[in-house]
Amino acid sequence: MFGFGKKNKLEVVPEDENATPTPYETTQLGQARHKVESELLVDHFMMNPTAVIGYITEEYGLSAMFGELYRLLKIRKQPYYADEYALDMKKTEFEDYLIITELPKPPHTGLCYRMYYLFDAPFEHIALITVERAEEGADIYMWDRDKNRTLIGSVEIGPWKEKSKEERDAELQMISDVFHEGMEPPAPKEEPEDKKPADDTPAEEAEIIDGEEAE
Image 1 (cartoon, rainbow, N blue to C red):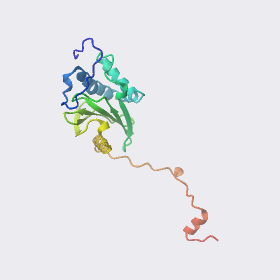
Image 2: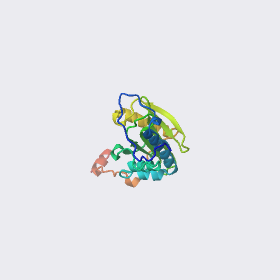
Image 3: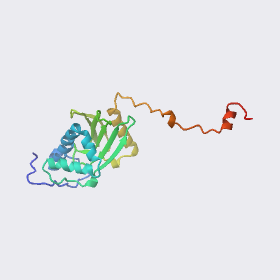
Image 4: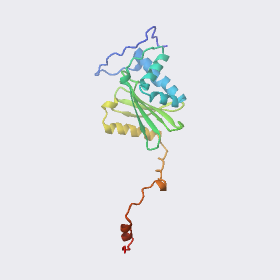
């Protein structure tokens, strides 16, 4: 498809940090990685989100899944190591889930620094967020079930590890706000009466509080 011929390993060339990043179309690696991130993975998640989440949350599952997707492109060995991928899961104030996946640093524009998977427990409300390298910083896109993507924001710093806690929190909040637009957080659950802490006030003290001196 991309003219890879008989090659089954794409070489990752060290990046010149001072150079303007080139578009993903300029290299075989860029074309293959973009196909995996923006087509194959989106298709798999939207068609079977439970399977994808179950896969990537296993030990080394994220790296293994990308390896499987590269093999669909006839690349038998993916060009990145397992420790270049990372995953974290959070529960939102809406009682649904947000999985943050960090990907190998993208060498070209249009490739992803990280992806966010958002979903509720029954997988009725899902979205995939991609944070894609731009010429400066990164652009953030949301994908819906019809595999349409919408630009929802941009950030000045792309790599997660280079961002401050405040910048990370702001990015997470922006994504949550867009995903939950028009929704109200669930009301706090009331504790059943039998689970509420017992009143341990001593009997004599209780009588005094009630204004009746103990005899």
